[in-house]
Length: 402
Image (cartoon, rainbow, N blue to C red; front, side, top):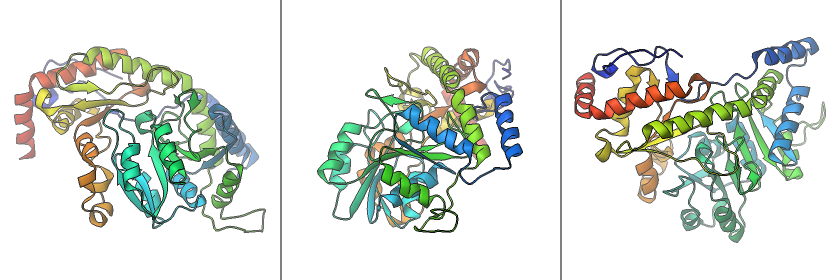
């Protein structure tokens, strides 16, 4: 990372603060030499896919880390959700948050299951059990909570609702690998939980996913489903798809899991630096990370109050881009405003006031191995200068857009 020296903001004609772009979710690589050893090994064995030894190692490692009986590795997190919901025979309607990545809803809609959008808690940003219960109908066949940015759901509250209505409860834990809640690892709640190991996640397989559960019968069905329903070389006993994880993807997963402590430590130090250097800045709140237990600190999220900050979230984001700070609006505009949901459920926004507000206010900042505390201090200084010169920045952005 190279930090440029400039006293003028780039949006006002100065030099970008950072020479190379800073991304949200830039991939962590782990030990390259160890990864290449695994690649050479799998090439020598000529076993590239179809339930190979590295996939087995990865599944065993994840199950042990989470403290569950079963891990079913998949080619990505979306397929993991699709297989999980299908294995649980979810149909009709399933309640999900709209304040999430669109894949949470798509995994249902792809199977002609209607995602019913419930609002999130204004303090923790995860599915609100009271809002979930209010939306349950005879057509409801399940609930999917999302541990947003690694922030754990109200697992007790959601489980009480699920039990009261005899509904399966599962979790999209795409952001939460390596996190814990109430003394248990995320991955051990509900009937099952699905992880994403996309390249942007703390631990990744380039592309990959996994489902973890203590339900061995459910895991058996999901293993059939990820491999066309094959039970042996020539016997198909179930309708399935191709959701297998390849050996080279599993090799990267093992390599980044081995680096998880190092990745988490860097993320935590960056988060502490953000907290220090943004303290007291009017209109900008750093969303706190949970205290106690384990947390991967992989997402640094700002909440921007336009009235107090002097700029909207979108204006702040636009002013940071010329500095090579590529902050992201996680999640905007809310899944209910995306297609096909905007057309199928045009009135959904009426029951999602918290989601509507958050989708206009939150901004994900770069972190990870591309940054250190010095870089974070520099970045926070840029944010302060942008807000200090809010009227000039707004005028410059308006001229650019004209």
